[in-house]
Image 1 (cartoon, rainbow, N blue to C red):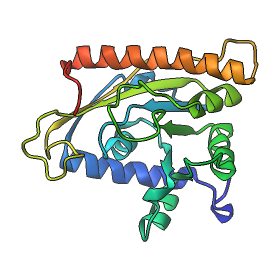
Image 2: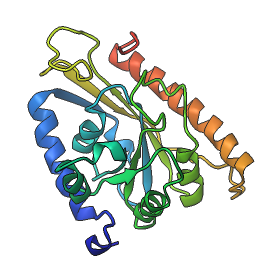
Image 3: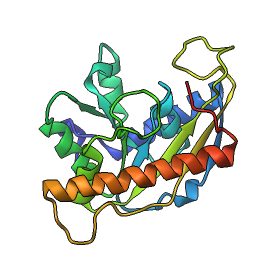
Amino acid sequence: MTAATGAPTLRGAAVGRGIGIGLMYGLWKPRVLGAWRVPASGPVILAVNHSHNIDGPMLMGTAPRPVHFLIKKEAFVGPLDPFLRGIGQLKVDRTSADRTAITQALGVLENGGVLGIFPEGTRGEGDFASLRAGLAYFAVRSGAPIVPVAVLGSTERRGRLISALPPLRSRVDVVFGDAFEAGDGSGRRTRTALDEATVRIQARLTAHLENARRSTGRQVRLE
């Protein structure tokens, strides 16, 4: 995939990773646990809970490999459009089957890259309670393993400049889980197979989030 086609590039994602490292470690105090669980090479999907606006940049700056995120098209406004494209991120229209985004995301995986997905679709409780089928589709179609990731910020309201962000200089835990296969080994890509895969994925992601909260001492639900 080349920049000339408008497709994301590994070089762009690597630049984004560098920006993420500087920004996240400059404004917050990330504590990264289990990064070694991300395969060192080959395609992989990072499935991330979504409670704060910094979840994407935080993961870009703490993941051991450059990440191409599927990001809602509403974020690509003004100068952010060329910037996000330039650092290898993918614009997706969540209101329809965005064939361009699907093709580009599969291309990332076919090229052995890392695809980042917020399977809940939008920022909310961040508890994986409502998963979209897109994650199962990409995992089953590509055969790429899924690594669950929990980004856990402070629930303390004091010190926040923006309600959707953790307080500046507060600790943010990024916990990577064990990689797993979403499919059942049959190779099926039917609607039923994807529905079954979604159920399996949700169980694994929910269990990882519970374990991450317990291991980091963040038992209280994020607000």
